[in-house]
Length: 526
Image (cartoon, rainbow, N blue to C red; front, side):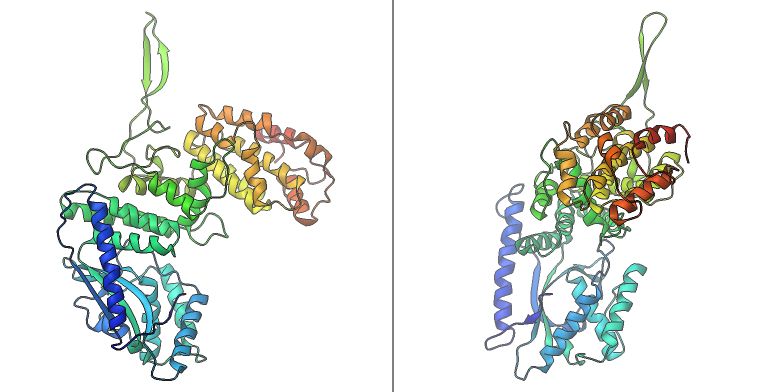
């Protein structure tokens, strides 16, 4: 947490105000530069108010209640951040007077005159934590505080309150007059997102997905402005539903980070021998710079070839020699997973980005966590829970990555059979290596004759993918030669899981595993 006193000269607010006015001038210049690509060079003045306010003044002087809009993520600060804030504030108060105010950065606010509220665009986590501290020290929230959160955030807020209650190293109530912020207030929501995007891209303190959200909200178009704002709110709510999801990998902290870093970026970028680690810049390149501007109507998104977007499904010949095409039933499904997108298709800015993310978030959850009526998905999950979960974390990630691409291309057709052969291929890596590192997962795709992800993306039938796994990844020699002691170490634990799943617990070797898969599929050993 970058919270520290800011040394001022003369008037306590002079240097801060001067620096902020320079910064706002930069941001306004950036905003006009973006707009000048589409508009006349002489842009209208931008309604922006800048001030330096203490925490107390921020709430007391606010014309409207301070609130969090529906599209914002919840309160996510963990115990370490809360404890650090508490210790920092207490240490500041112990310093001898006179001392400068305790500066806590910029707060970006959108004044919504229709809803009579000030919505916090940037600074939500800091202000929420300080409001909790205010409740603990003064017995009430600050005036005009209208922050509301989901039950998940409420648990974190209660945890923060518990830390602030601890008497050791706790600041006094005077701190609320000593904390100061630079407050930027704008009246247009698209300008707020522009400021947020530009400011945070400079120092990149946020995760790439936070910046992508701000960028694509700004790219949502529409006429009149009320429709544009309604579309932005709708897209932001879709994003919020993605953020609030339970991670599919237990070690991940937030679902949206995992979705983009471990699945979508890899699915799109890992082709041929190009299999590298995706960093912040790589995500911004793929999901911001390489996205396409909307053409035509701002809420109309181009479609590309996909399982859900094809006219003909079969061709038959009539008795007189004519051909007849059997067409696909066109349905307007409200389910995000049924959107007619392909995982490697071009992504269009604004609405297109949010719908794309929503589809694959839903598809991934349907594969792993959501309730299902599909027998194929149920058996897939059994493979994942009993075998893959007994394997390396890095191999788990690429199992789910490949499976997500598979269901995107083929639905749940032969999903169980695919999962058994995919697990068989990854199991060989586990038996071969006591320590499975990240590079082993990369090499699974990189060193293959054909990158499996490419085989899936270009396949027409699930049998083609399964045949590729059986031809290139059977690894019979590794299974035949293994001498691992059952139940001992990570390899032994995996071996035990395999023997139990295939009903061969009495055996000491995995040499017949390739044949066990066929028996399992044919209803053999339970």
